[in-house]
Amino acid sequence: MNRRTIAAIAAGALAFRLALMVVRGDYIVYDEGYYLLLARSVGAGAGFALNGLPHAALSPLQPLMVAALTLPGVPDLWVSRLMGALSSALLIVPVMAVTRRLVSDRAALAAGLLVAAAPALMSFTPFFPGRSWNLYFGTEPLYLLAVLSATAIGMEAVASGSVWRYAATGALAAAAYLCRAEGIVAAPLIFLAMAGDLMRRRVPWREWRRFAIAALVAVLTVAPYVAYLRTTLGRWAFSGRVQAASRGDRPTPTTREAARHGGSVLEDFVWRGNVGRFTSELHRLAPDGSRMASQYWGVVRDEQGTSPEQPAARHTGPAAIDSGVPIGTTALPPMSTLAGLWRGLRAVMPLWFMVLGIAGLALWARKADALWLAPVAAAAVIPVLFSYIEPRVLLGLVPLTAIGAGCLAVAAGEQLARHFGVRHAWSAVPALLALLLVWPAVRDGLDARSNRTPLQQVATAQRAVGHWLNDNLPPNALVMSWHPAIAIWARRDWRVLPEDSLARIVNYARRLGVGAIVLSRVNPSPIADLPRPFTVLLLDSASVLPDGAGLSVEPVFTAPLLFVGRLPGPSR
Image 1 (cartoon, rainbow, N blue to C red):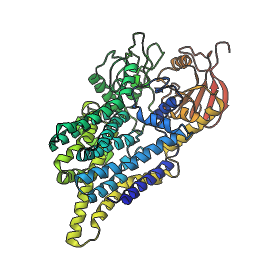
Image 2: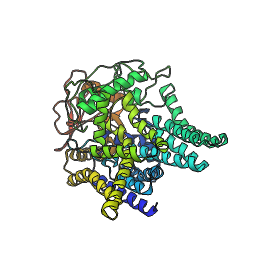
Image 3: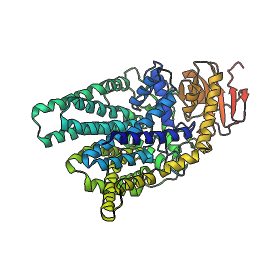
Image 4: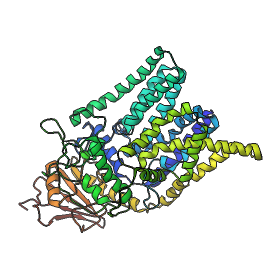
């Protein structure tokens, strides 16, 4: 296949993603902020920590790469976004390589075009609630690039017998695991697909040494992270994500129990708009007020070296408008797995694209080689079956659908050329499908140029507040806020704002040495009527607020957007 053609498609995909990134403006979604804060912690030598504690819920590879790339002084926000955009654009390379082995060069070109045009595979888009699903992904581009590259190189390794390709397959499979929790499913299945292909080819047993090399490379790559989890959690584990989503009032939840309960909360949040339940589960303080109840915000070890979940009272606060999900708490019947899977698929790709993809894969993919696609598909579907249904978990199905749709589009174009004499129809049909596919992202990008969407306006305000804190707080002051963007723009270490009474929040903040608590009208707040859209409470070691006492602060700064007040100590 012509390398110039591949480079042109990748360059076009990257340019379009960069344009969308520019019009996105200041908007930082929650997970993006958490990964940035993890990267800053690593870069500052404080370890893999969030909220001041060792972290186990989010996977480490993307923050580690951002921390390494920011060492020369490049802004970490742009490093993170460029990494996502570049990974998403380069995804066409392994997709085209896999499609070429399955079908043909022409089908590979069509699949590459469709992957480049799929809105759900573009970093940071779409992000307009009410029109499109908020499919932000921070680690998904890197994960998909790793898992599909492992698939493509694994296929080549078995066919060629190259030791280096085997080793690269092991490293990339391990990288997929280090990117996202879905990699726990994908990585072992890649090795199963490789073993199945070797057995199908009936290679001599001595050739299995190369397979052993790939497995050894993978084990050595993931070993440091598994050891970190063992040290942090006090038990052997491959991920801390499921336990971090579990309830605080279950002392020793099993993995299945934690997944089921955490899944129900997240399912209510994603599909029913029950923001209050989600926030009250995730943002509760422990009963003693010394830490957050959920391990998502960091792992606290007791004297025995374990990290149990502790009971905590529930506190329901106002719903956040920044979630991208309609606000509401109406109780609905439980959603069946199949119904949720269908809704999730509709969220990540249009129906016509799904139909074309399934038909193309069924008709054109060679059955033996097509088994190499199973790890990516299983890693998308299995979490849905055992945990909860979230649209972005299903993003791995989009490049597979593009492969099938590309095969069908080329076949249709060839039939047009053969029967009607339409020149270059084999490439015109995929190009037309790509234009239809990319239109939603173009529309969203055009709407965002004015920087007037609600999320953009909130994001610009968060940046202004962060800059004020950066200019006026002591260099080492900690910032507590609901949204991590405040601390990111303030260039300060962050502590998550609990959902609790103001007195308990202030006492908790004092224990942590927080210098400023940032409250906002657009996020859950312990104060119902804030004087400004953003209110900053400045604290020191003497600041107190007895439970049940009214709020009394010394005004420090007032502007249309921001009110800053100092919480007095007992002697003031």
